[in-house]
Amino acid sequence: MNAGSEELQPAPADAGQQSVQDEPEASPSEESKDTAGESKGDAGEARPEPSGRILDAARSAFERVRTKVLAYPKTSAAALIAVLALCALAFGSWFYEKREIPFAGGAATIDVDIASGMSGRQIAERTREAGVEVSVPAMLAAMRLAKGGAIHAGRYRFERGVTMKRILEKYRAGDVLKGAFRVADGATLRQTLGQLAQAPEVKGTAGTMTDEQLISAIGAAEKHLEGLLAPETYKFNWGTSDIAVLRIAYRHQKKALEEEWAARDKSAAILKTPYEALILASIIEKETGQPSDRPLVSSVFHNRLKLGMRLQTDPAVIYGQGPDFEGRLRTKHLRAPGPYNTYLNTGLPPTPIAMPSRASIHAALHPADTKLLYFVARGDGTTKFSET
Image (cartoon, rainbow, N blue to C red):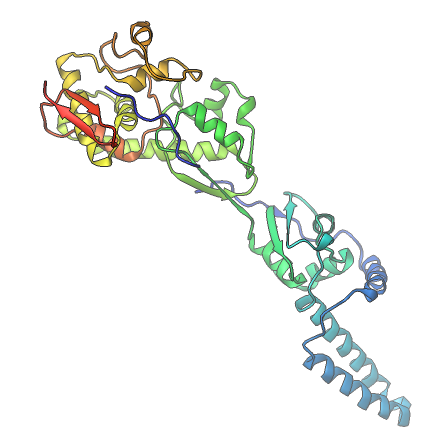
């Protein structure tokens, strides 16, 4: 029987957000001093005009009170102080809500990485270092004055035109940049780990582990991970570890296998354990060109197992050749002894040979009721079945 294609398909999250301290470390007096210096330094920047109504009202009130102060200096000093405070409040409100913060180098977007445990000052400094040209003292003041929850760790993406208000809203909402990774149907463990290691949104740690360490880190009870990662697309916070992604994929596959095993058809009695079902499902995954063929391919293998016939499935032999195999199977491969040579050995191979989809697991446990014993792949992706 012909081997299924070895080509991979082109390529949710359990990494919780961790709270970050948002209390500034600087004292109020230091902040006031720094803020004054920063305001002076920013005077030459090109800023958008305020929306106007609050400031216009403040200016008008100031002029009226100034006139009265000139006429009645003793009785109007308090009013002047109040108007000055109103003007300061209006300017602060505009600075917080309306002023667009420039980006270094005129960038269209900037990513900022906030680590767990950062103080408010560290968050403000990290934001500025990334290229969002905020005033650190002003941002510290805004953190204290603007009510909100904790700031969350993660990677944040800001677009040109962002305001101080929007920055703090994103930080406190945990609106972090997301990543995604797909475990492809029929991919091997080696292929999956290789793709995961190259994913920029994932923090790589699995590459330095032995197989035993990786199995332990994921929490798997099995001795081999092949076949035990559910082919799905997983979404997660940027910077999530590859172990966290693999752990979720493992749990999803175990859950699917348990549910399908509990609902298995009595015709699948030749399979004694869920793991045997997973092995057969992985072979079905590699041998099937059309989804509608899965129950028929499953039927062929069930019938051969019941009769004590060798499975004679090419994908298992190819898997046994290791990652360096290239080209087509030859007679020498079919005659070479090995645990995955289903032309020489009866029964199932010792482990799955790929990551089977849930549809293939279902097919392994619900074979079609036929007497089919053979199939061959046609060039158009369909399969021809026969009893003899």
